[in-house]
Each structure stands twice: as C-alpha cells, then as structure tokens.
Length: 299
Ligand SMILES: CC(C)=CCC/C(C)=C/CC/C(C)=C/CC/C(C)=C/[C@@H]1[C@@H](COP(=O)(O)OP(=O)(O)O)[C@]1(C)CC/C=C(\C)CC/C=C(\C)CCC=C(C)C
Ligand SMILES: [Mn+2]
Image (tube, rainbow, N blue to C red):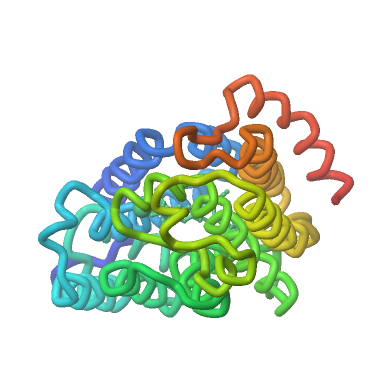
C-alpha cells in the first residue's frame, strides 16, 4: 500500500507531543494560575486546552503584542486562512499542529475561532463603542468564544443551549471585568470600551474620562458597570457544574478569582486610572477550598 505524506497526526506521536509541550510552555508563561488549574484535568483535556490557549494568545498578540503596529486587516485575513488550513488538516507550524491534534480528539467547531478573529478586527478598526449592544458583540467575539472552545473539551455530554449560554456568559463576564480594570491602560492606547451611551446616561463626559476624573457621576457609572459584569458571572455559574468533573474546580476557581477583581475595583474607590485592581496570590489561594466545595455542591 502506498504511504502518503504528510503522515496523519496519529502516526506522528513525537511531533504532536512536542507541539503540545510548546503550547504548555506558552500557557505556563502567560497564565500561571490558570496553568496550574489545567493540571487537574485529564491529560488529553489539558493538552487540548493548552493548544487553544496558545492559539487565543497568538491571536490577541496580533493586535495587542509588540508587533501590533504592523498588523493590518490583511494580516488577520492571512491568520484566518491559516486557521482554515489547520482545521482542514494542514497545520502550518508547531502550535497549529497541536490545535489540529486537539480537533481530532474533541468536537471543536471552527466558528468560535473565526469569530475571535472578527473581534480582533474590531480592535483594529474601532476605538469607541456607542452602545452596550455593540460592546457585547465585541465581548462575545474576543472572550465568549473562549467559553465555546473550552466547552468542546470540558463539556460533560451533548451540551444544551443553556450550558452554551453559560459558557459564553463566563467569557463575556471576564472581558467586561478586564475592560473595567483596564480603563486607564486602554485610554493610553486611545481606546474607550465603556459605551458612550452609558457615559451620557450618567452625565459623565469623554473629556472627564480622558482626565481620569473620579466624581459622583463616575462612581455611579462604575457601580452600574460592575453590577452588569456581575450579572454575567451569575448567568455563568449554574453552567459550571454541568462540566465534566475534572474541569469544575479550575473553572470555579477562575470564575471566583475574576469576579473578585470587581470587588477590588470597589475597594479602590473606582480608581481604575492610577491603580490596577488585582487579586493577590494569598487571595487566590483562599478561594481554592470554596471553589472545590462548589464543584461538588454547586452555586
Ligand atoms: C458552562 C461554563 C460556565 C463553561 C466554562 C467555559 C469556560 C472555561 C470559559 C472560560 C472563559 C474565559 C477564561 C475567557 C477568557 C476571556 C478573556 C480574558 C479574553 C481575553 C481577550 C482580549 O482581552 P484584552 O486584550 O483586553 O486583554 P489582555 O490585556 O490582552 O489580557 C483575551 C486576551 C483573548 C484571548 C484569551 C485567552 C488567551 C484565554 C484563553 C483561555 C482558555 C483557552 C482557557 C479557559 C479555561 C479556563 C479553565 C478558565
Ligand atoms: Mn490583549
């Protein structure tokens, strides 16, 4: 029988193992706590999550990383073509090989990956959001998609629409939290993610925002934004215990750690201009038993 090249991934175990190891390295370097959480998962699952993490990180770096000035719509088009090739069984590099191998083990759909690239296009072309509906689309694309990608690996069975919604909600909650934490940092890059309609509704001007003014209007506006982000965490929470057993503890931990950032913003009297809200390592560790308890007993 004639042998055709390249060999299918099943026949290249060493290359695939090396590819996963590269993705593991990227994950451990960028997201230490999250990486430790993945070690609780079965080996095949954790490797697939690392492959997704590495792809998401590389995608984000195109518009946020050191080379971002040279990223154009054409770059993102090429990146999407590379993605299509990967899913079609023609990975172009070691990270894509890992992602392709993951697609052979888990029912990963390509659409959330395409949607994330569409989110990066928004970052390239848009630096203001008029309404929350527009911002929500952005958050789905850059973060809700991560929920859907993860679900293909961490989902327990054929996932219901409710579980898919919960997975998207967790991504959106994380991204809204990111946006509130990084208001000052994003301003430096000329980006305003807070919906302009919300600023107007709370009588807070773009000029005040640019000057980092913290007044009554700002505090009321931020309280509203924080409650909105919390409502997405609340929507996500019942979905976590629908995940397979070994994913529940890490996902609860991630959810609780991220949600705590909102408390920190409140604790900093809504100063997101000169202070960065974060959860300390002892703070993160303190959640672990509580997250474990929830992974058995639920919300
Ligand atoms: C049913 C149910 C509740 C299922 C759970 C599904 C699940 C595990 C959801 C995870 C959602 C999640 C962690 C989303 C990440 C959202 C996020 C922070 C996105 C970031 C985007 C851009 O933001 P920005 O540029 O403003 O931020 P930086 O300053 O650059 O940080 C992202 C950076 C996009 C890229 C996302 C990643 C690199 C994270 C990928 C994460 C995973 C693949 C694993 C998720 C798994 C767990 C266990 C949390
Ligand atoms: Mn980024």
